[in-house]
Amino acid sequence: MAVIDRRQQVLKAATKSFSLFGYKATTMDQVAKIANVGKGTIYTFFTNKEQLFDEILRDVTLEMKSIAEREIKRDKPFFDNLHRVLDALLDFRSEHELFIKLSQENREVGTPQAQEGLDKIENVVLEYLEREVEFAIRQGEIKPCDPKIISMVMFRLYIVLTAVLNKTHKPLSKEEIKTYFHLFLAEGLAL
Image (tube, rainbow, N blue to C red; front, side, top):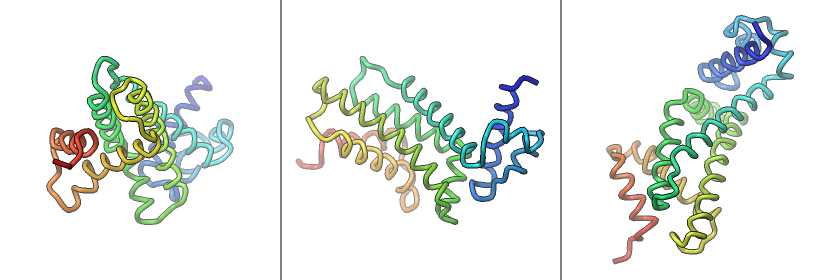
């Protein structure tokens, strides 16, 4: 087996272990067992569990960037692009077992590395939103504003409409989410 294949084999096994057991409960022994390699093989590629976890997070964020780039259509209005990107990223996040486990571990155990992993991923989304807000301002599609603040508000609003609200309210359809998002951010509530 080629060296690059072994490295990928270890990364795939580590992703599975972190997804099943969380950060805290994942051990290099488990990763080695899942990858069907000796523990020494893992250490030829990664110094420790933290480095292995960081590499997995890097791969996940690259995949998220690719998804976002795929969803942007420069001939479409800002809010259409924004909705498509956030929708695709949240679908990716909700289907990706690692996100689910890290969120669960963070809530139940409060493992700092789980929170740091979630923060790294959130920062990728926020940086992307900020760039898109800056682009929309330059194009004259939205009012001049602080892109950092607007990006955070947009992201949090989307999380509330797609996840938090579900705890106390019937889940909103994608169309309802789009309508509320547009109402709060594009139209405003004033008559």
